[in-house]
Image (cartoon, rainbow, N blue to C red; front, side, top):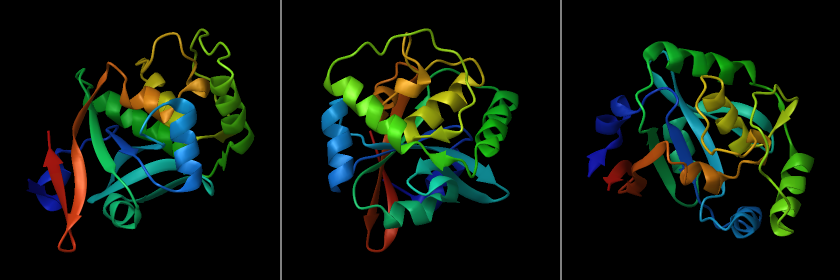
Length: 190
C-alpha cells in the first residue's frame, strides 16, 4: 500500500478516476449499464495540486482529488492509459477539458442514453469529436481522449459512452483503488 502523497506524483494529466457508489441514482446507472462503475472523471495537475475534472449534476467542474476521495461514499479507482501519451498530448487533453468547464450537466441526454441501453437500441455509430453544450461524466471523459485521437471504445459514439465502457476500455488499465484508513488516503495496488 502507498500513501496518497507517495502515489499522487505518479498520476498524470489525463488519467481516469472511476467511481462506484450506493446512492439510488448511481445504482440505477450501474444497473442500466451493467457495470459496477457509475461515474468517471479525469485527473489534471493545476500548479502543484492534483485535481479531478468531472461532469456532475451541477455541471462540469474541477475539485482537488484528495477532497473528492474523502467526500465520496464508495469506491474510487485510478486508471491510466496503456498506450504512451506524450506530454504534449496530455496538455492538449487538459486544455480541451478546461474548455468544457462550466457547461451544464446533460440530464436529458443521460436519461435518453439510459433508455437506449435499457431497450437495447443501437449505440454503435461512427465516433467523431463533437462539441456539446451539455455533458455527462463518461461522455466528457471519452471526448477528452477523443480530442487526441484515442477512442476508448470502438464503434461507440462518445455521447453513448457509459462509465462501464470507460472502465472496460482496452486502452485503460486499473492501477489501484483509493481507501481511507485512519483518516489518510492510501492506494491499494493491484
